[in-house]
Amino acid sequence: MGALDEGHYHAEIDNEVSFELGFESQPETLAIQDAVRVLLQGLGEDINREGIKKTPFRVAKALRQGTRGYKQKVNDIVHGALFPEAGLEGGSGQAGGVGGLVIVRDLDLFSYCESCLLPFQVKCHVGYVPSGKRVVGLSKLSRVADIFAKRLQSPQRLADEVCTALQHGIKPTGVAVVLQCMHIHFPNFESAFLDSTSQGWVKITATSGSGVFEDGNADVWTDFWSLLKFRGISIDNAYRRSSGQSWCPSQSCGMPGQANSAMTNAVNSILKSLGEDPLREELVETPSRFVKWFMNFRNSNLEMKLNGFVRSRIDTRSPSGHGGNFNDGICSELNLSFWSQCEHHLLPFQGVVHVGYHSSDGVNPVGRPLVQSVVHFYGFKLQVQERVTRQIAETVSSFLGEDVIVVVEANHTCMISRGIEKFGSNTATFAVLGRFSTDPVARAKFLQSLPDSCSAGR
Image 1 (cartoon, one colour):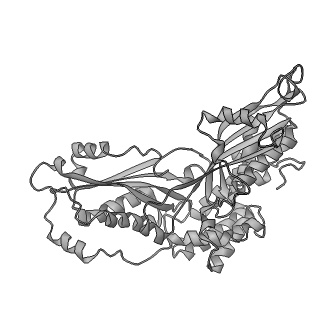
Image 2 (cartoon, helix red, strand yellow; image 1 turned 30 degrees about the horizontal axis):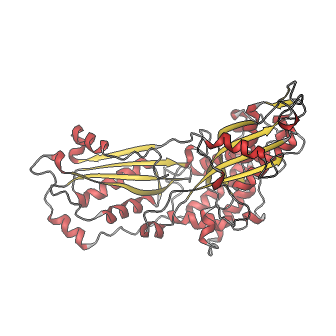
Image 3 (tube, helix red, strand yellow; image 1 turned 120 degrees about the vertical axis):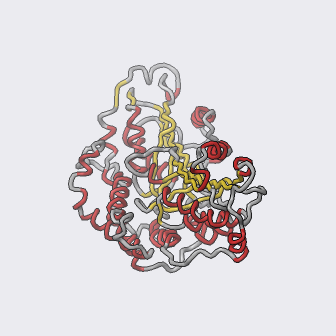
């Protein structure tokens, strides 16, 4: 996409302010906002609702920032960062000189999946063998990788493009790229209810090499992998081009069915506004896949029904906590799977929910499946984590008793795929009702019982 072409990027790459100037009125921004409004209306949402009134602009800003690599040039970064290093080609040593392998590890990146438009996380490791008695500034390896990550990508293409760009840009003896990629595996509404053990992430390792690294069995690759091995990275789970593996979870669901034409046209408009060609082979089915996934969160007026057994138990149950020591009767349902969609940026967040309640006999009166169903019912909507925590607490209190505590732990895609780019962050919220709201000892007892889930759901 022109990364190796001559010419200069019209704005400073590192200057966030320059990106903002006139951003709101640019045709691409306006076109994406119009498309997002069509998508929201397709869900049955009121686009003037307070929570989503500014969502079209937020989405446009996030997408354009997250795909700014289309307008960036590798040569602008590399050409001013090549430094002479005497002795690189004198004497014996790797690549005919004493200059050996250089690796920059653990570069945190994110990219947008070309198959479904959801962001995926990347841990990037780049190595090269210098030549021509010159080395490149180490930070430039990261910046070149980021240029290609800020596009619609697949792991293998991303690895290949970074490798090729560095080979052309710095002309070393060879370049090696290893990417550890993580893509959220988001179940559809029906499958989530049927199988609550669905895995949260698809993980894959992609590699690419040029020059002395072109042969995957070369000794220099052994050195490269050895320097990564103690960081938990193994060649055994590297992506094989000929294996037929399906990277994006949306592709494992088969061909998408007939989708709302207005919504698919809106997604096509977004692709064009980002600088992509919707007719590119890898993107032809993307609008339909995205719409199919997006419709999981359509606004439904259907009331959630609790079965008659539960209702009868609710009517006959005495108020919780009467008699005995309240703290002795604390029960819990932990690690309930949770999936939702941020209404501010239309990006997924997922994790686990923990529910605590009081039961004098230590028995859940309705069973774990119903509590899990409540979590899914409120999760599969456009949401904010604070609201869904409260909604779950209020609903389960109707059949578990008035003394309830709910903790939601979630990873938010919007925390990695926007300007903040806070990899590994996790958000926890909790709601308390009844005596949990006034008894700090009871709250502490429940909170101390929670499993270590700092990577909630990964």
